[in-house]
Image (cartoon, rainbow, N blue to C red; front, top):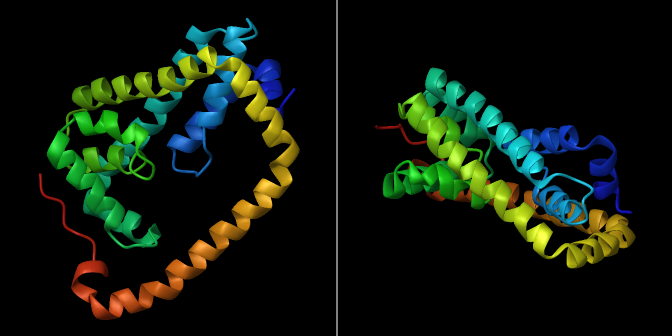
Length: 213
């Protein structure tokens, strides 16, 4: 049995809650494999799919609501924080703001499925003055669709999920080393390139935009 599925069998919903909460809080820990594994376990009767979906929604909404109130209280200071943490200053914030401008509150739903934007959307919504009730409604809907998509996929394709997890278990060390090398190379490239970008386009990349409702 793979480590992910074994952890879910032993610890059940609490481990799923913890993984999803940590990811939604901003730590780059992918929760999709855990949701797929939860769906696969539901297909074999080792886990309750409704409990898995419910626990995932609760984890997402709690983490997102915390960020929402950070954005509500911090405003533009939160935007500046994300810009300082980003390797490409203001790019993620601008993409998220653009999504919000085009889609409105529906952007809270779509951001769940867009890497890099999901963590920025809740504080951005708070900074832009979105009402708490509207935020909870759309964030809850996005969390439901996000959790249900992966859990249903794991349920329907549980045999393939188990095979994939078995392969990953055998290759996990090599994959981890390859990922570390790839991430290190990417970070090095971005930091080497960043001074050049800042030097040539200081007004566009060195400062973060002011938020306007």
